[in-house]
Image 1: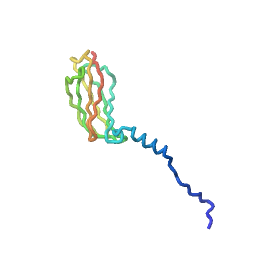
Image 2: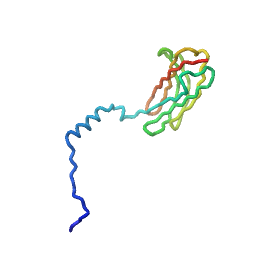
Image 3: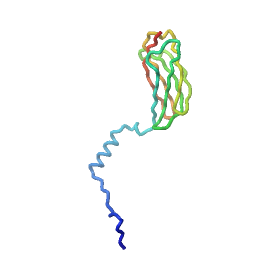
Image 4: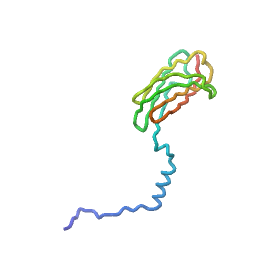
Length: 134
């Protein structure tokens, strides 16, 4: 019996060089890239909030395309030293929004606003430089 539309069977061969390249790339990628973990981002209007007015922020937490749930809290740092804490709250579906009101006592002092994002995949710290103005 003859099958004219059939293509001949070809064997796939992998060269040793290709195998070395694939293994080399796999070893070069950090283990953390394949492990758990997540990405947290902070979106804020600027680095110079006005004292005693609302400064709206958005925090997102994702793992690949998955929107995560978790909690957010705040730390206020001056020259790397924690000088205050703030309560945030919990979030779902990957997004947390809040309005921060900076006190008048913070005017003119260079500060780091640190957002602590915790999910079931770990904790991430986001630092945002601010200098409060009038």
